[in-house]
Length: 510
Image 1 (cartoon, rainbow, N blue to C red):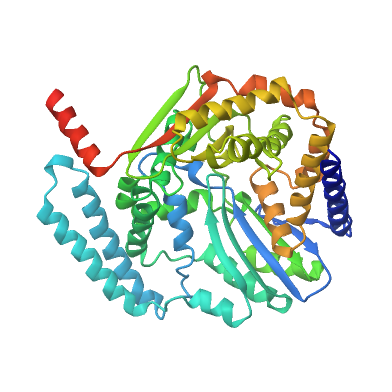
Image 2: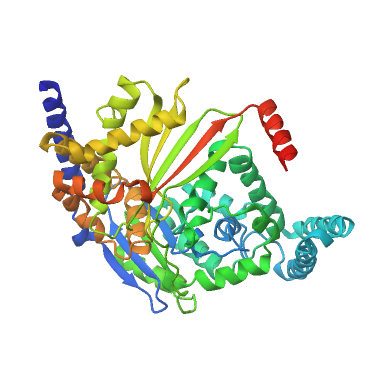
């Protein structure tokens, strides 16, 4: 008990140290909001020190904004945003353009042929596929490969990348402070004059990502089926990378329509953090991003997931180690109970003093690891999840039962004051640590504003964590962690020989 008390004290000291470090500036005093006439919002923070800055452009568009037929398009468009513009990545846009039109025509004809199903002509498919490849090869004569990346690197950029999730698409980079003008020109140009060149070859790259990440990976396959089982109505059920058939059929013109609908100025938040002159920064972003025409916001998603009224299960048979995933429906992060879920996550799975580790991993040796997570969206109600990797010879069902037993202790034995304080200290330290770097703060600001609607939610996050009580934990656990509200997925090991024999038996029974 004495050791535990000292651990709590040390964690509190570490958290307070980070708080003082982050408290060198108060966000409400240092974040400058600047909104252009076209609706694009900028969050500007000056941080003295090294002459560098970090930029994050976040669009409120992701996998939840897709419908059947175009799933995976938000992710694919993120790839295309690095292909350049009418002036970047090309030697002669006017000569390139007719080739892109001819490529589109051939690709759309190919899509129509594939859509015929049983009446599809394989010979015609092969001809059209070759035609698309040949035309793209000819158009490649005008492409300056990776010119956008090279331009950034030559000017001292680091961390140039992008990411797509269910809720948003993010573009980020860090640069020397005297390259702000260059950044503004590049980023505004690829929003104003993008050219989706090499679209179909890049589409093939994403198809390969799908094969490597899902089709050949048992955990990827199970996760795909798990999410699609947990959500029946809401578009959160689609994988961000999309269904393979959709990826293979989507066209460049559909991607341009998607961009025109969602990549509008008012649907974006830009965070700039670092050694910046705020007034000069305002003039630069107004000059360059103010060129983007004002367009209406995309319509909201009206589909709501109906209440789940019974346990759902999905089993994936694979020649692989067993794996278990469980999810319970919960409200969105804007709900007052979100802070309670954060505390429950930490109580159950954070560190070697967590309940899952001590009971299931250390004492009973049922699993190599047990962890909590939240998926798949933060804009809408989501899932509180638990995943576990069983240790041989313990089957997934035994580990599953052990998980329920530990979670039941949240009701019968909620965390006491000491356990709660340890959790608060850990969560505080992690949160503040994420704000120490320019990039970390820029990412957080853009996320809270674009996805949750207001960056100021950051200001109250830790206060809400500190306010969570043992009774809150008991109440939330009792309300949400029920059998009727959960979806369970498991990988059941099966050898190729067993699978073949089972298939033969099933065929015979038919």
